[in-house]
Amino acid sequence: MNMQAMLKQAQAMQRDMMKAKEEIDKTSFVGENGLVKVTMDGTKKITSVEIDKEGFEVDDLEMLQDMFLVATNDAMNEVDKLTEEKMGKYTKGMPGLF
Image (cartoon, rainbow, N blue to C red; front, top):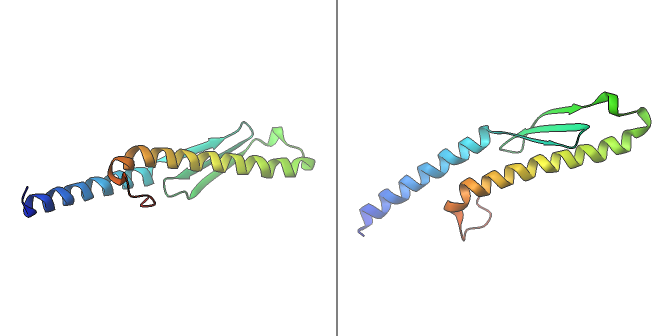
């Protein structure tokens, strides 16, 4: 394979990677545990938090905080899962790129 063909192939792969990353960034991911629902985009920016106010009493603040953490981590795991699914084919052997 000549250098020009390799360069074209690398550029095409870079375009595909950027397209996949843009798609991931625009996707909404939801983490929830029944009483708390956290939505974030593919950049892990939280876009909304919903709390089932019927399920909590004022005394349950600590539980609410814990459930918020669980839901947030759940949403982040969903981002990571899709990122690995879509970007893994490009980043095999190159950890930490995305």
